[in-house]
Image (cartoon, rainbow, N blue to C red; front, top):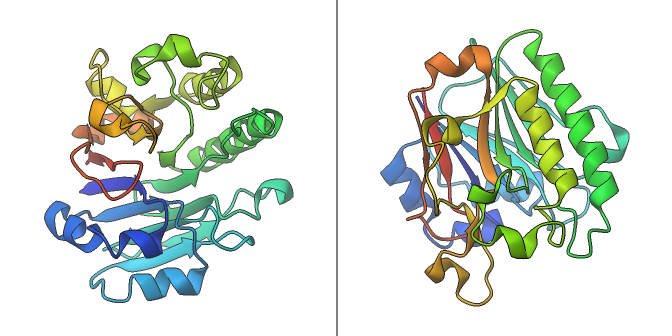
Length: 253
């Protein structure tokens, strides 16, 4: 079973590029999307020609902003949205699908903003989201994937020294937030398989030819409950796939 996560940076834009060809080539059983930047009806319209998938989307109240979706060949037992926190549930950031053996959660974690003005809100989010995941995990294992908007360790970005405590996504507070997920028993699948592998990134700035030079950040993850780890056969980052400022990441069960 192949699960893929991709921040598409606008579903209506990417379907005009390589999106359907990507699905044909990679054949995901489940595809989780972040930053759909569309209302639910617009997501359905953009994906109208896609056959064989059940489509569930969660849109922000603000139009053209945020948003997540799960596209799955197998119909889930249940699908629900958000994390039951009023201050966080207006931006379409979380979609959860329940399957027989696990919960699959896809997330678009709030960015702390260039001036770090949203850093306090981000820390609040991380704490509430972890509580949400642990509550799910009390019932069955969890797979959580998406854009976490943080490079966890120095190996996860091209220029750690230049960005540490200066750039959103690599402040100590955000690093600690990610460590809290890991310390709570959620395993970073890519680093489990490739603890020392360098120059593997999932996001590049559009500025300065960053992608061509591979000056990137690994901010897209698949985390799984420790108890579920034996079922994960592989993890990958698909840096060869363009169409967005992020590339897809995946695991195989």
